[in-house]
Image (cartoon, rainbow, N blue to C red; front, side):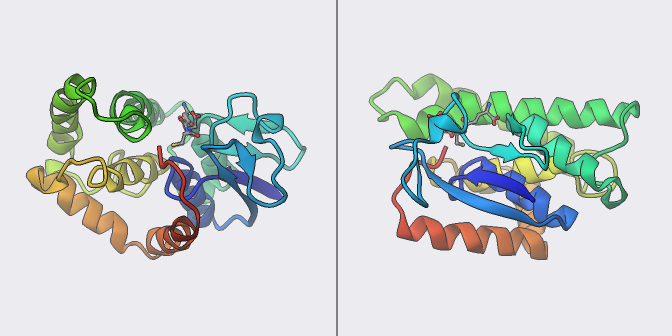
Amino acid sequence: MLQLYFSPMACSLASRIALMEAGLEARYHQVHLATKTIADGGRDFRDISAKGAVPVLVLENGERLTESAAVLQYIADLRPERGLAPRPGDLDRYRLQEWLSFVGTEIHKAFLFPTFWYKDDGSLAKPRARILQTLSVPSAHLADREFLVGHSFTVADAHLAWALLLLRPAGVDVAQWPSLAGYLERMQARPVMREAIAIEMALRKSVPVNAA
Ligand SMILES: N[C@@H](CCC(=O)N[C@@H](CS)C(=O)NCC(=O)O)C(=O)O
């Protein structure tokens, strides 16, 4: 069975959503990011991945895959009939990678990561100013589209929806971009998304961890 190492409401939420949207069963292992330990048993998470970061997907053959962009596409390709990623070779597949990369670098690492991990002592002024410009890109893109790529939900939507969910706790009000606010509302109305968020919010209440 597939296994996912995750931390509640961290970027690994997108991988949980992808697994659930794909209808794939998995065993989930919660990680305490601050201590780099696995909740069940207290083992060192760095023994699983030297990166010490979630998500880590353990494949059926025991190999471990890291990096959200890779993990999300791998999950999508296990169930191509679900349409969670355009087929390889299709131009839209590169559009998908374009968005996965944008969310992972420009939103996650450039803004959410420093905001949740470092005290806002003034050094976050630049990322805070820049994120407004960054978010204008998906905002304009989604002004007349329901989904990021093509005409149906893909793993890129799982990734962006996760990032948008964390904006409010990071001090950014998504309401200033009506198209993003509407998009997030639509994403959160998806039964799988609702269930995945409910599972992780319940876990998060019980364990104090850094989210991004
Ligand atoms: N480039 C990686 C970043 C993964 C990442 O930064 N995960 C965060 C949670 S959202 C984490 O585990 N941080 C712990 C750390 O970096 O020490 C990806 O896109 O998957």
